[in-house]
Image 1 (cartoon, rainbow, N blue to C red):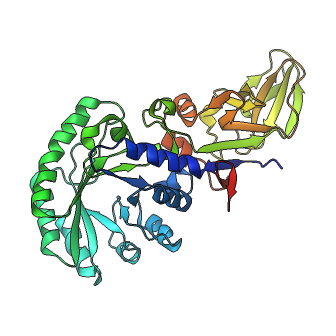
Image 2 (cartoon, rainbow, N blue to C red):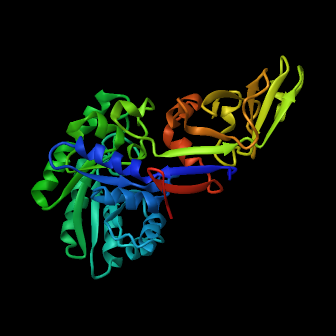
Length: 376
């Protein structure tokens, strides 16, 4: 039976992407699977399990609630919360046994006062150019690290980290950030052992072996997407998600008749129009109005008219259509020899693959499989 909106995720593809990434790592570097934002719409718990089974060393999320979700699902691996954690959120983080990121002495002091008997692993962040979280001052980062060390065994200095701003584009600034980070990493290696040094996101992992250190933090590459918004085949990555709907209705738009809000499509000759029951409430952005293709029966058809909350319309052309009501319509994925990737959609919208994937809403059903074998 056709479903209104369905995202099918191939966990075997995620496992192969993990293996592909790990095979390209420098030295003894390991992979941290970043599953924040519900694994960019793929499902955090399912992706975490697949990544760990394929050899990922640990997991990372952005929020304490995301860490708690993994624990509630029975996942026992190390989980790093990379985002800011408020005083009100600390109890959730501690209950989830999360590893936390620090860059201020005040936060470390608060964490030390609240931490339980089992201790908290802390990663100190130096801002080398992203300009968001972390301290820009090397002396401050070192002082925070010393406070963590002085708080043992309640706190444990687990890592030194930074984050790259331009790894998907400006290689020169990436090199500048690396140069700024290395003295901090070296200083902490001298003070604490064992210590995990980590900096690389997916883009840096694929582009700069010098950024691998002890651990790389990959998210978008896990899902088989190219962080440079190009063809994932260039990196041997395999897209894990396909997004489909179905043809709910077909009707003839006579010359001069329109389809959709605002009459942004008006037939210049008699044209067959298919309606798909999927829209911007499902993640098909309005920016794709008259600006996207849909794959049906191995052929590519243009999306025409305005994307509405619950429906889009597709031109089947002027000839009696070969497409029938009930036919599967693919918005992300393959149909016959045709393929439309997340990167294709992102480039039409002048955005990144992450935003397209995160935009696939909760009302879209997720189904998991392992190379076609359904996973409960």
